[in-house]
Image 1 (cartoon, rainbow, N blue to C red):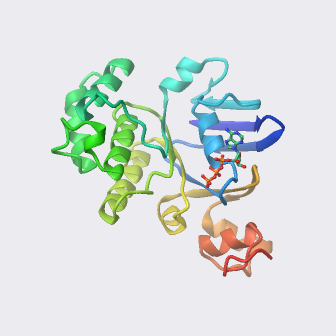
Image 2: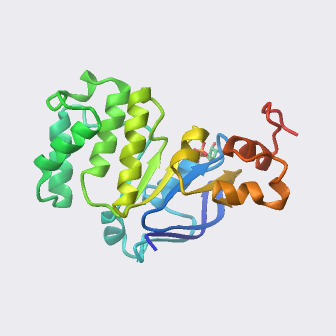
Length: 248
Ligand code: ATP
């Protein structure tokens, strides 16, 4: 199992943002993490990435316990946050070389060139972050995560801010990584895209997992049968809204 989460709980003071969350992501799977604003998706991803310390629960990356063996676990995972934070004084290539040095990537320049081509950043190698558009900065953050051989990829809103061509390319990139054996967990509000690329979907609401399965499985669940068969209809139903978005 590439990623295994057992009874994850994360509080902020007295507030519980993620509660008793358990799930697994196998190699080759793309699992979509969806839910309304404030459902706890980013808190979950940041907890899985080791940025936030879980209040309780167990996270394992390739059998390595994130709390007990953080270096082994973190070496195997890459987290791509939704806020593209980069080093102000490093160019695109220098960012990738830094990752190469930190993680001991053998052929970093060759990989970087290929990845920058794949993400349509060719020509921006010597640009500093403030010379890039927001979407380009987001792609650089993603390139930094993909340039090393992580087995578990965590994406927070990887498609937001990208243009339509960028979205299509990113989808292809994500699917290709899964085909190569990566376990992928991605959060997004773009439900039609989640439906297209994800092999399975987890729906969260108010910190809890309220649904987990393929879109077909969720659509055939007895209590959802009349909701309809697309993910948007299922989402509205399980989060207690009608299709106009009004709370029931
Ligand atoms: P969105 O779709 O809006 O990005 P999300 O599902 O990613 O939402 P989180 O960012 O994980 O949700 O937030 C979950 C809950 O935790 C929210 O109620 C939020 O207000 C709360 N929260 C997040 N960060 C903090 C913090 N640093 N301190 C206190 N509460 C927080």
